[in-house]
Length: 490
Image 1: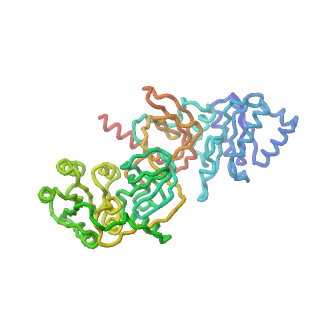
Image 2 (image 1 turned 120 degrees about the vertical axis):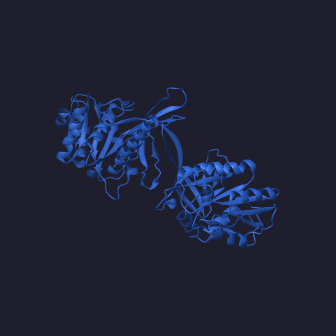
Image 3 (image 1 turned 180 degrees about the vertical axis):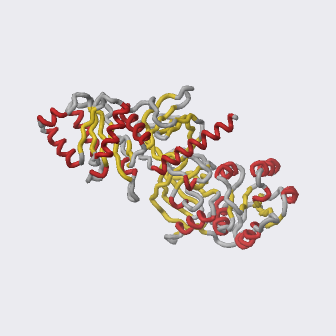
């Protein structure tokens, strides 16, 4: 079939790799070297047409390189691409051949997977090897850029939704909002999920945000349903540079507004917020204790633009239905949900089309009061309101839900609206209710084909640099999905 260059100084690990290769194809030939120094010396002799080196080479076609990363002293792995060109020059392979490069290595606290994120690198395999994953990864690399037809690891066909992440740049972070650089059209009101280090708490790695302003090359997003720690952390970050701007200026009311707080006997969430609204806003405040009283109050105040802050205890179990029922009669209401506990991400997303926001107790009252003025600038505020902010050059990730077609321990296939470049990298999140334990998985696009229904494309990805924790997570996710599918079909 061909020959492979293997650079590995540990004889046991070298034997493990060779054994996996022979199981894939017993006709493969392996040229072993121990270190990068030995490899570079070997390359110099090859360039000089050293007769001994030339005579030792197999006559078959050169297929690729497997090398231990520990032996290399240079930091720029793109240098490997230059070695590939030499093999073509020496006629060991044709120019159009897709020679593969696989790195192996041990994981350590300072390891940076992105250092190896180049099209010329097919994968990174961590030691000690998972034998099935090693065999599958090598087989995929040997077969080149084509669909995986031989499976040594378990395969699950599924229509589950997962998240594909896209890296974007932000130019400003404020206590109520952030601004992104954008060259694509996006509509005001669009809501999406974002991953960033300043969103990370004991409960979350991400947050929802909604487009409130679109300008040439810039989009401003307001936060939605931040948990308590997130709102305080972002406020602290925004205040670092001590820069502020007044929120929409005028104190004069241009509309007739009122606030209604729907209390609940089980807690006193409304009473925590009412004093702040009395202090900062010059609009009537009314308290009621149940939904029947709310409807009566709304019927009496239809001439006013009303904001309703409703205790989640009135909605529990039928949140979307209760809010829809209120909106059906009073479509122009601004509804806000007050909750003593964090709601599920799925419920937050569902309510995002029905509620202006969800606030979690204990409340960050400054965030809530200022945020209302940001959304409705013609509210009459008794005192000036300012948002702290700082200008930044920072990368965050936006989540793009995509449809899975197939997943295994070694890769996945997604249905997508367009062709993704072969060799390009994407990050994926396989959703679970507790997102703290969900790793971000890096994968490389290995093949793209038209979807069977002719609508869109099936993009085949290979997981890149899976460590032990990520591999265990994928296996557990697949098991949970398999059980879920069985129960649905029962």
